[in-house]
Length: 249
Ligand code: PGA
Image 1 (cartoon, helix red, strand yellow):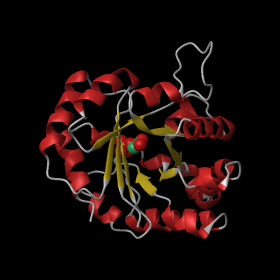
Image 2: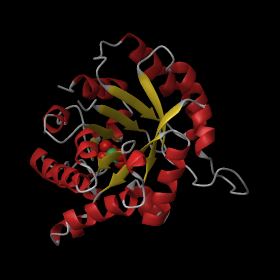
Image 3: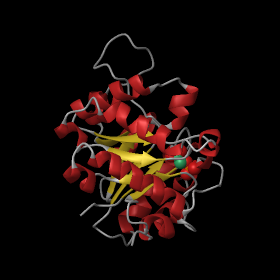
Image 4: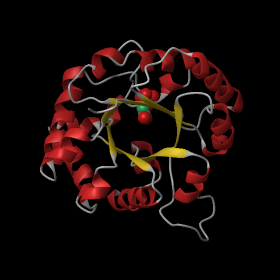
């Protein structure tokens, strides 16, 4: 019913050589045809990745986008530019963008709309900090981040979003949410989506992100409301990323 998605967020890492390595490994790997897999390299590598991934099942993604269609925005790229390079998925609201580049809910919404308007799929990242979890505010924080976007989208737009739950305390720390902790938040997100539309809630993909690796992927992905993973560090090693893709049950 929900096609699992494994997406590798390289952040500001990688090289042309790594793009080539992924292209070669994924062109001959034994992979299920019933999952979606994507690599989100830094923007300068998109053209090379488009070519290198041609004979592979890998989709291409981007880590950020500017909400405007064009204009005097030095250093930025638009959704239609990403689309020209075969990009299918675009991250929005990643905790590093929220905290380091001050992208608030309004900025996240504007980017989500620009991504949808270009016919691409936003991967909307949400997640609580450790302090927020300790204060018992995990659900409130996460659901508010979801609602800040979903309240403003129409029914057709909502269906095209992927959500990634990424507890901030688990990103890049080696500390993963337990399968039970992750499943509880995913179930809360799905219930919240059900308030908009039950059908949309049952088909929308919810990814888990935060120190997902080959050792813990299968257990996380086996949870009923976890439909894939957003992988940072472990997506920089082709064997690890392949093993995660192959661990989808
Ligand atoms: P991590 O990053 O897998 O290195 O924790 C995940 C992410 O930031 O998307």
